[in-house]
Amino acid sequence: MEAKPNLFQTVLGAFLLQENTYVGMRDDAQRIKRALVLIVAVGLLVGVTGACGRLGEWAVSPPMDKMQSVVLSHLMQMPWFTDMSGSPKALEIFKQQYNLGWNIAKALGPSPSALVGIITTPLSLLIVWFVYGLLAHLSARILGGKGSAGQTLACTALAVAPQLLNVVMVLPFAQAAGVSTWTLVCNFSAIRSAHGLNGWRALVATLLPLVLAIIVGALLACVGGALIGPIIGRMVGGVR
Amino acid sequence: MMSELVALARGVLTFDDATFAAHLASRDALKRGLLLIVIVALLAGLFPFLSGIASSFRPVDMAAVERDVEKQIESSMQFNPVWQDAEFQRLFKEYFQMGFGIARDIVELGPNVSFLPPWLGRLMRAFGEWFSQPLAWLGAWAWYALWVTLFARLLGGRAMLERMLAATSLFVVPHLLDLIGGLLTLLSGIQVAGACFGLLNTLMGFVAWAWGIAVYVKATAAANEFSLGKATLATILPVLLVVLLAMLLASMAVIGIVVSAAGTR
Image 1 (tube, each protein chain N blue to C red):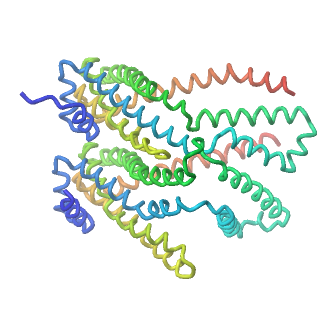
Image 2 (cartoon, rainbow over the protein chains, first blue to last red):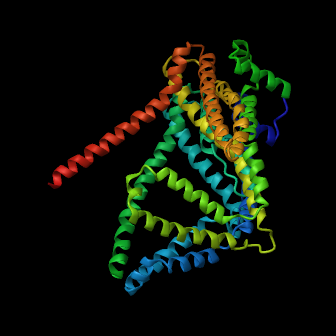
Image 3 (cartoon, each protein chain N blue to C red):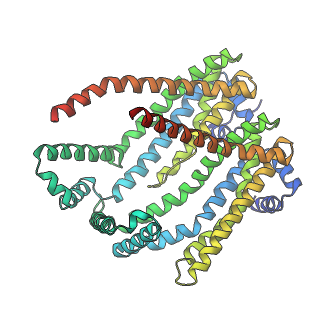
């Protein structure tokens, strides 16, 4: 009997789109347990390295609060600022928007709160895997797939392998590209292996959940816009 | 392993049929292709990276940066009719200097962890950018290969995605010339002689790009076992599609503007 590949071999095989890795996962009696271990291990590794990189970036970057006051002090010397200062309401709106912009920048910029990523990265990978896996299973079954939900989930868990490209972000200021594209390719291999579908059907089954996610996202954005729009309108109107 | 890669590179550069066939028949073709992309991308960025390391230890000369940026803007704007207006130029320079004043003060701010030397951030940035380059190449190559695979299948190709990825990864080999390109970029900073190096760099960049496309077409043909004509079509169709879509969107926007303008009259 052939020995089961270890975690590293599994991740590498999945990343390199090796058929035997996907088939091995599909046919494993403990596939869901292996899938969970794989996702959590990769998620923790990516979370820890990402947090280290972001902390490094924060450590060597100038403080955002000081940057905010430096920029403001220069803006205040500009001619348009003197003109605007004549209107207290305009000055108030400017201050609100200026602070809002900097608060967004601070939230997106590197900070010690990046350590939260150690927990949120594996959690988000688990959620995305579970939701995508179930939707992909439904799509594949509609298209004539023969795999079980467990087999689909086990195989799509292997699509977490490209996340390891994010490990490069242990270096501050490094950026990982191509993760989404390679994840798509791995998901395609996973669905094809789990369900024994031909290339075209496997492609449709891979893309359907993403198309659905885009439609749902667009709908939510529309509903959100319809709900938040009047509130913002009232706020702006109130300031005037 | 290294001698294997060198032999593969030599065969690819000379469009040797046997090399392409042997690469595709190999069990670890994709692994080798990915390795090639990583190595070539790192080599292409080597000289800019070394230059980045060297300059990270020097304090930032904001006055020199300001002069360079101003010179670049002036040379790029010299044919712009708006730039000929004296009032616009005066306003632009005034706000440009104010903007640089902000940058100058920010550069002088110390890091969050105050005991760290100011050069450490610049050094880390040089490393980060260098190691990001292979991933940027990988992402762009994989995304394009997906589309070429799709069109190749529509044109009667037989290659599966894994085979196409393994084959098209060979496009990266001619980009070994980018290593020399990186060196020439540094040399182009030299006064007088720099212009010649700059010209040579542009020429080498073009050669690497064209050679890379030729390898891509050859690899697509080898993987799909079809003619070079079909392979060329499959390779350029994604770009053509993007151009057509952009033109369609642009014409729709123009029609929309014209119709709305006519409606308001």
